[in-house]
Amino acid sequence: MRKKKNMDEEGNAGEQVGRVLTVSLFLILLTFFILLNSMAVIDDQRTRKAFGSLVGAFGSLTGGLSPLKTGDSIMPPSAPIVNEKFTIDDLLAFMDKETLENVQIMIHADKEIITIDEKFIFDRNKRRIKESAYPFLQRLCRVIKDGNYSVEITGHTDNLPAYEKGYRSSWELSSIMAVCVLRYFITKCNIAPELLLAYGCSYFRPVAPMTTRGSRALNNRIEIILNKKLSPYLRRIYKKRRKGIFVYKNFDFKIFQNKGIN
Image 1 (cartoon, rainbow, N blue to C red):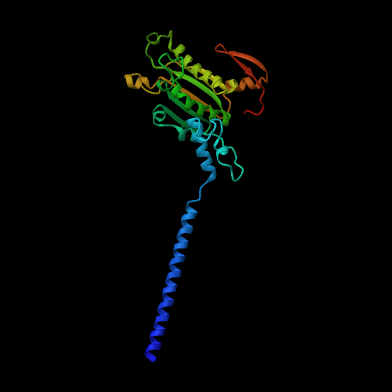
Image 2: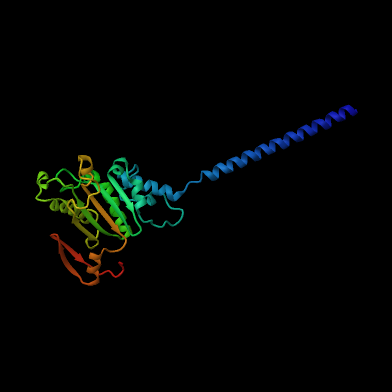
């Protein structure tokens, strides 16, 4: 009897140990799944932004979505969303390999300088912007609008004779390049003309030696300077506090009073 009793006690003890081990295993698995779930929580705002980017880039998605809709209309927000400004960092994030090879962006405390190779932005006669450059320029215009920048657009050439390119001088060629970009910003992107200034620099501001064909070509470029404050030229216009039209390089610009611009 004593031997049987001992066997029963040992059996009960073994059964209790098995139950403890089973419960412990379930608790460990439960903790593991809770951890996985917490790591897999989806950020609704980022998801909406991603879908919005797809719609903006590709025009439309299945289900009758309009290219003019944003990601917020695709997925109903769980909380109010604040419209974020499109910045230089966002512009960099959208630049593909070809753009990165032809566009340089330098960020300073008081301005950003975007340098664009002429082959990337212009067709052969330098008077028309390539359609392939539209996506980059449109996003750049969004940066300008959201940041309320004043903008200087400067054209630059190499020192080869301008008549070989079909122009009377390098001054004419560099000015035409700058004004072509200015016209695009105004007509295609609705940038306020009073915030834009365009001029040519000929070959007098080189960024590379004029010694070889390769280094010389680096000087054929457009520089777009985003000033966080108005340039002195535009500041003089605002200080006069006048309305009306002024003419610059055969372009008519309408002046508005805006006391909020520094």
